[in-house]
Structure formats: C-alpha cells, structure tokens
Amino acid sequence: MGPIRAMLADVGITEQQWRVLRVLQEEGPQDPTRIAEQACLLLPSLTRILQKLESKHLIERQADPDDRRKQIVRISDQGEQVIRDNLQTSLALLDEIRDRMGAERYEALLDLLNDLDVRDGR
Amino acid sequence: MGPIRAMLADVGITEQQWRVLRVLQEEGPQDPTRIAEQACLLLPSLTRILQKLESKHLIERQADPDDRRKQIVRISDQGEQVIRDNLQTSLALLDEIRDRMGAERYEALLDLLNDLDVRDGR
DNA sequence: CCTAAAAACTTCACATGTTAAGTAAAGGAG
DNA sequence: CTCCTTTACTTAACATGTGAAGTTTTTAGG
Image 1 (tube, rainbow over the protein chains, first blue to last red):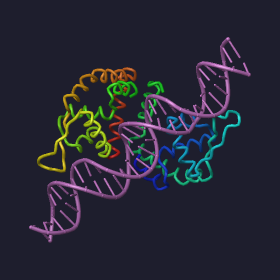
Image 2: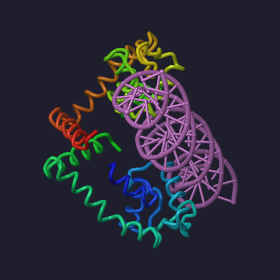
Image 3: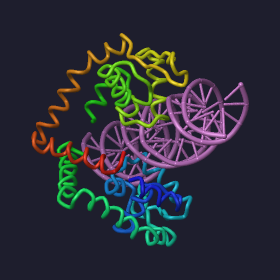
C-alpha cells in the first residue's frame, strides 16, 4: 500500500480516512456502526477518524431525528472533491498490483482472505 | 489471531513481543536490525518492544564488543520459560486454522501472501 | 590524520488497533 | 410508569505502524 499512502499523504489523509470517505461516497449517508462494518474498523477507531474528517470538513454529521443515540454521517462537497482527485490513481495502483501478481493469483488471494475472514467468525 | 492474543494476554505480552521472543529463541542472540527483518518490524517499533521485554526481564542486552553502534540481544531464562509455557498452545491454534480452511487452501494462502510480499519489494 | 557520509539505533509526533469503561437514549418486563 | 438491559457511541489507556529527525560510532576518502 506504500504508493497509495504516499498519494494520500499529499492530500493530508490516511488510508483509513480514505476508506471511510469512499464508503460514504459509494453507499451514501449512514450511521457509524454501518460505516465501521463496511470499512472493517472498530468503533473506537472510527470515532477518532470521523472527528478528524469532520475537522477537515470532509464529512458532515447530524443527529438522527428518530433515534438520538445515532447520527447520520455524510460526505461533504470537499470530501467528494478529494475522491474525484484521487480515485483514478488509486484504482490504477490496484490494477498494477493485480497485473504484477497475475489476475488469477490476485483473485485467488482475495478469495482466500475473504474465506479466512468468514471462517474466523467476524 | 484472537485466541492467540488472548493466550498471550494471560502472560502479559503482545503478539509482536511474542514474535520477537520466538525469533530470539529459534535463531539465537542477534542484533536489532536482524531481529526486525525476521519479525517483520520497523526499527522504531522494535526499539520500544525491546525496552518492554527488557523491563519484563524476558531478554538481555549487551553492547557488541566489535561495533559499539550495535547490541547483542538474547532471550533470558524467564523468556525461554514463557516460550515453553505457550508454544504448544500456539502451534495448536495455527493447526486449527489450517484445518478449518483446509490444508491446501492454507498453503495456497501462505504462498500468495509471500509472493505479494516479495513482489512488493520488501 | 581529518572530515564527510553511512550505519545502527533511538526519539518524536501522529494515526490506528484493541480492550475496558463510561454515557446517553431506547426498549422491555412487571 | 419504573427499573434493568441493550444499543450506539465516546473516552481512556496502552501498544504498534510509520515517516522524519537526532545521536553515536564507523568507515571511506583525500
């Protein structure tokens, strides 16, 4: 992930912050518990990440009107802009890894990792 | 790694501290740079880990007589005892993972991960 | 011999992983 | 409605990952 980290470092965000932004951009506004599942983060980590992203004005939060324990997190216009500025490069870097490993081996690796995750009961 | 972490938590050490102890026990006394390679750790992390292990009296350090920039780190008797007390359980837990995945898939996963590591140029 | 550059760590600063507590709001039993 | 439990987070505390800077000791040149 080195190259991706380097790319994001230029923008001043980390891999995890990037993952959270992408989840919000792809899946739309949602509460922290769901974000945590999608981004494979524990809630304590996510709490800090959301605080950082909010201070950078890349996301916005509002209380859930139906359940005041919950919040609704959404990506901001600035956040969308960060995605737009880096998505192409990010995807290209992943493609490069796949190419270097070979498409078949790459898919096999993803399958096995996913399998390990499921069997471990997460 | 959950179960292994739990086992080690009883003894009061972490996964990385355990890895360092095992490297020292298997490969014998050596300098931090080599330990870092074997245990896949960066030197700043290793520095802290060695400080913790030393304060727990699980390792011992001495200056290298030939090159005063270096040190020689060795596992202590107490450290060896920790290994003896947990190695069986540790190996058994790995076997369980392998069994649940299937031996073939397990080997394939290790190969692919190793391959990824090499191609990434570490 | 003397100095600049490299090597081997260590220290810092910041971000996350992880477990345990703490807090506020929602639900459920009686 | 009241009390207890659960849910959804947030805080706290400690350990590691990571990039950058600092220190001491060697080594390579000149």
